[in-house]
Amino acid sequence: MRALRIVIVLFLFFSKGNAQETRSLFDGKSLDGWEIIDFGGQGKISVREDAIVIEAGEPLSGIRWTKDFPKANYEVNLQAKRVRGSDFFCGMTFPVKDSFLTLVLGGWQGYVNGLSSIDGYDAANNETYDSYGFSHDRWYRIRLRVTDKKIEAWADDSRIVDFTIGNHDLSLRFEMEPTVPFGISTYYTTGAVRFITVTMISDQ
Image 1 (cartoon, rainbow, N blue to C red):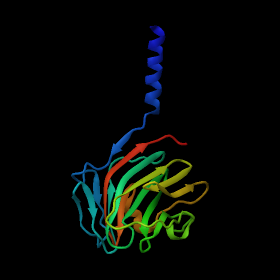
Image 2: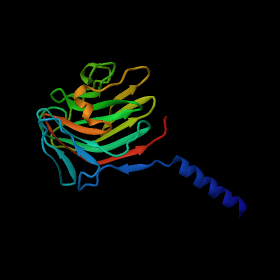
Image 3: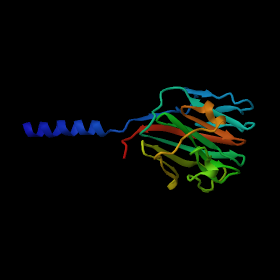
Image 4: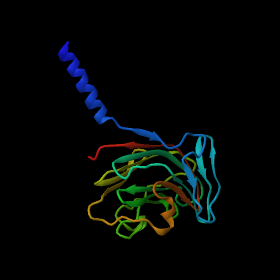
């Protein structure tokens, strides 16, 4: 009986140590925890049909998270879609330790995906460039994984970013500075996002 108790205690200890904490960043009803960014020329931001709809701006519209957000070893999951327009419908700015990057989805007239900026070069001109095509009015499952060593991103089951940080310089384009620490923006395009969560992970 004593041996059984020891096994149970060890199981609970290691289960707790390996548990992944997931937080929802959107309740499906309101913009609680989010701030509408004053880009100047931004479009309307609203919650409709359980999603945050970011209307096209001139050129940018977006929102930023105002509560605590991790700096490394986390994973963001959300669903996003382009409603109208032909440029990026989900520009996700996120922290990487003491730096920030933006994951661009469907930029430069619709087909450029990647990270801005790496060594001073934006997503269209650095090694993270990818040409995955996004259709209009279709929800995509977006997954972003950030560790101390790597940044990875998927659209549905396709990995569109696989970047080893190494000694690269990470930075933001100046237009995206208002979106830190974590923000979602669009460029001349109406986009929608829903089911936004962040999960703490181990560095592997």
